[in-house]
Every structure is written in C-alpha cells, then in structure tokens.
Amino acid sequence: MKRIATAATVLALACGGAAGCGGGSTTGGGATSSGQVGVVVPFLTSPFWQAYNTAVPQQAAAQGVDTLATVNSNSDPSKQLSDIQNLLTQDVKGLVVAPLDSAAIVAGLKAADRSHVPVVAVDVAPDSGKVAMVVRADNRAYGEKACRYLGDAVKSGKVVQIQGDLASVNGRDRSDAFNECMAKNHPGIKVLDLPANWQSDKAAAGLEALYTANPDIKGIYMQAGGVYLAPTLQTLSRHNALVPAGDPRHIVIASNDGVPQELDAIRKGEIDATVSQPADLYAQYGISYIKKAMAGESFKPGPTDHGSTIVTLPGGILEDQLPAPLVTRQNVDDPALWGNRSQ
Image (cartoon, rainbow, N blue to C red; front, top):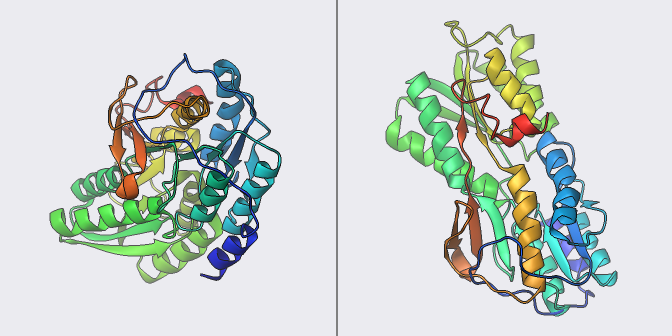
C-alpha cells in the first residue's frame, strides 16, 4: 500500500485529458496517426520483455508510427507513474504501457485522460480507468493449461507454483485458475504456493527453501519462465534433481512465456511445457491499436481479423485476447512460435 500511495502522490500534479474510446474494429493498416507515442515497459530483466522491447520500434516503423525511445520502469510502480508523467510533459499523443500494478496504474490512466492522450495497455489489464484497448492473452487459460498438463503428468504429490506479483491481475489470474483447476480436477495434488513478484532472486531463495523442506516435489509451475527458468534449473541442479524427462526422478515443469531459453530447455528435456505468450503480437497490436485510437477510431467486442476475440472486462474495459498455444516436445520446433523466430 505504501508504494501505491507514493505512486499516486507522484501524479497528483499531473495534467490530463480524455483517452481514446473503447469499441471494436480490428487492427491493421488504414488509420493514420499524428504525433509521437510513448512506450513504457515494466522491466528488461526478462528475455520476454527484451524481445518485446526489440519488436516495438520494428512494428512502429512498419506501421508508420513515430515512437519515442522506450522507457524502462525497472519493476517499480512509482517510477512507472513518474515515467507516464514525464512522457505527458513531452506532449506525446498516445501511450502504450505495460502496467506493473493493476491498481497503481489507474493514477497514470487518469493523468493521461486529463491530457486527452489515449492509452493502450499491454500484457496487464488495469483494475479500472480508461484505455482504448488492453492487448493481452487469456491469463486464466495459462493457469488452467499448466494445471491440466502437470495434473495429468504428476497425478498425485506436491507441486510448487512459483507465482508472479499478486498486485498484478496477471499474477492473480494465473494463480486463481491454477489453484481452482487443481482443487477441482486433481485433488491428490498438494500445491505449494511461492510468491516471487516476477523477481528471479525471490524465486531462487523461495524454491531453495521449499525444495529443502520438500525433497519429494514432483512438479513445478513457473508463472514467468523468462525470469524463473534460470533460478529454477540452478536450484534443482544444486540438489542433483535436474534430470531429463523420461527419468523416473524427473520433476515435471510447466511454464509461461515461450522465450527461446524455455524452448531450448524443452528440447533438452529439462522442462516439459510452456504457454507461449505472444511478445511479438503484443508489440504489433499495441502499436496498431494506439495508431487507430490516436486517429479517433473506437472498438467493440467480438472476433477480430487476426484470430482473436475482443472481450469486455469489468468496468467496460475492452481486451483483445490473443492466442497463446501450449508448447511441448511435439511442437517446440514450430517456426510460427515467436521464440523460434527471435533466436
């Protein structure tokens, strides 16, 4: 609460205006935009966000959108709100923001609204506020896919869930869906929750303690492979527990993100599955939606022309739920996976 209150104070003097409306056209060419766009990323310590950060200027150039250099909020919600304020003082005409905290970001959305600057949220939906569109995959589906994969493989015993930041709707959605699915479909599995706030050091310390106390762990669900993969594999290796798939002692691991490192780990048999969160599409459609919003277009619920569906979230917020496939040994070499194209 202290960080959020501090963040709100940062924006108390922000000037503002009304953001872009919701509604439902699909993305693509045709709309024109005028003015620079500010792009805010949450952190760059994950290969996922590094890939997104690389894709943004490429997509902006391809779509004729003038963007400033991306701004890194360094995992700090207070800094993220300061970043938004600084961009607004530079007279940007649109913002593409990946929120760190679903509640704290509302202050930033209000500041943009007062400045008449439309906002597209990427990866994380705000709890409330005005955005032209949220570009995101179905995060509850992430948790459910991981649950079903691990449940079918493990059957019974202990499974660790390395959670994201529960101040983010992503962390909440993945955790709630995973736990609900396990309780309903796999009652013989005991879930050990490990809050790690999207931070590799917290994942490493927490998993070390959990594994030491529970050496009979049979499975692990990593909510963010981009930051949790390395510490997880390192911890298991220290305990001589990193054995390949097919070995009776293998710990089954399912993940989220689809970064190249996860795909390589699947090929090696170190982990078993990941849900490929579309970093490339986040960049593509984040830029496309802000271009349309700046041109005055509105959007509505329903199917898009790019294989997704726009849904209405609580508060009337619109979200384009992009596809996020489960990746296993069977399809890990699919060239359509962004993780294979970015290597």
